[in-house]
Length: 190
Image (cartoon, rainbow, N blue to C red; front, side, top):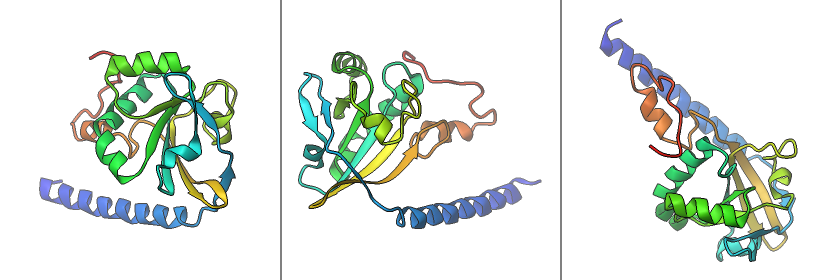
């Protein structure tokens, strides 16, 4: 098949993907809010920080569920989030959480020069209650969307992270290469 036809086919499929994304957005708007408690997570100093305080006078909050230091893939996502820290924080308050202790989080964040807000969910049911710990000690990375109003805090959406998802652009660049990812995997040190 000649290149012009291939590019036409790619454009057609891209339009179909955009249409599917719009369908997903429409479905997400139908999700019924689920009330959650005002969890207290810990900052790097070990001080308790309530979820309600993270909204910063806004009514929306993004919670990024990171598996912690144990996961090179989560580290890759966090590295990318670090690069968009300022524009994301300008658009909506967000925080990265993990099951690591505050001490481990602090040391790891400093070693990677992460500047985004981070809280430890260690010792709480937060990760499991929000659907990112299906079995004790088994974590999934992803994102929860919370809202706050006079009736409390509610989870109104979620998604999971994985290679090729919409949350880490590196995979999409690699997909453009003739050999794709060619077995490449994230590392702690490059």
